Amino acid sequence: MRVGEQSTDPIDQVLGEVPVPAPLTPEDVRLAVRAVVVHAAEEWPAGPRCRNDGTAFPCRLHRWGRRVLLAHGLNDRQLDALIRHGNPFVRVPFPFTATGPAGDQRSVPRPAHPASAPHWPRAS
Image 1 (tube, helix red, strand yellow):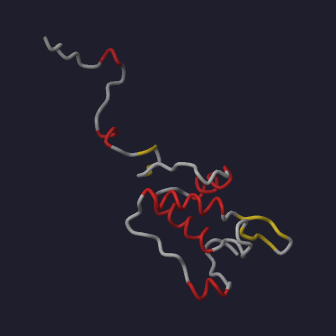
Image 2: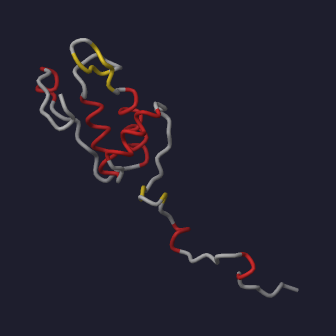
Image 3: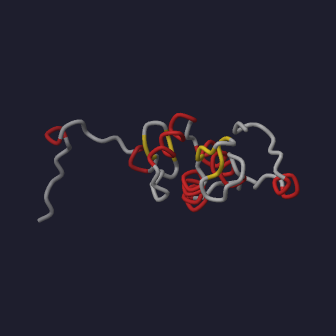
């Protein structure tokens, strides 16, 4: 089963998809990282299964984690690299941007070189 396909697992059909919270919090992102890494695919003779619970891959928690991280701004390539890395405690910046973590420090212009920094008069 591919990530975008509908599951045929009876539990999935009864419970449905785990909703993506809106707005996302850092805790949601942290749990989503754990979900995609812990519930990664493992090859079996019958096809890929969830490494954690043995259900058809992708299981409900892997799909939820993937949707949360995509909503957070990661792309499929970054997500796959995160899963390959295999550490469920990897920190993904919040908020996430393609060039790195966003924050107040990005809005303040910084001088290119310390010598070009403004010289403030010393307090006497």
